[in-house]
Length: 287
Image (cartoon, rainbow, N blue to C red; front, top):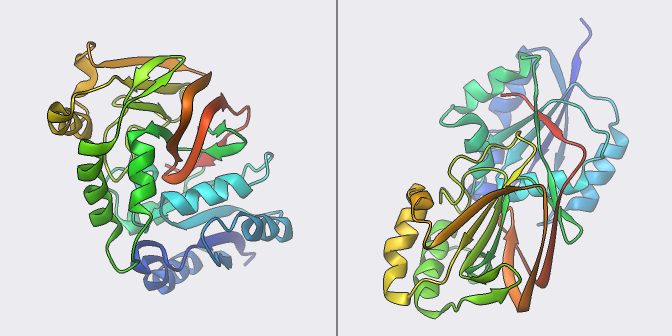
């Protein structure tokens, strides 16, 4: 029997080692489905060069599986060739799995892997900001500051604990910033509805509509921030047009009065200009 070829990109340190813990199960499952597996394990954070070399050595394949979280997915998105049309599965085995949850909701690992025999991949939008690609979303301002603080500090503290600690600190210390779109606490450019481990910043966003959802969170007084952030977490902020502004976009240039922290798919950056564009090509996910 002629075996099909599956590429597996896994991050061994994602989600406290979940990809490694699940490796044998993934291998056995794919082999039972008739796949021969070629694996690349990322060597460090932002291992884009290594992933790119891996793709160069494995041009023809029938399936790409990404075993990790949003950060691993972002590395793959930035390494993948523009003409790549192999069907993709993302296994939610990282600390943050917002994009996988957007595609698969609450499906189990087995249910997601079962999709490898499905032949109708869904084209998903990709964006680029300041030369770096993203697939789930951008958070500028408060969200970027939180991403920066959550990625700092000792490694043995769980990421989710550092994330919520950073949110509490930011509620009382982060100041709004001036932009060409007006003064803001957060500017989000979203492809999926959630980031930051389930914060529903862009309720209604879908990753295949050829648009991004722009959400501008206007300045909020310190003593009201806990209330409004709770609304955002649940996606209940969309009805308050006095504090939140929303529209669909394909491209946008955001100019800030100073360098502002931000994240792309959870990865920290800082800039005073954010040039966002919808890419002409897409990735094809089995869903």
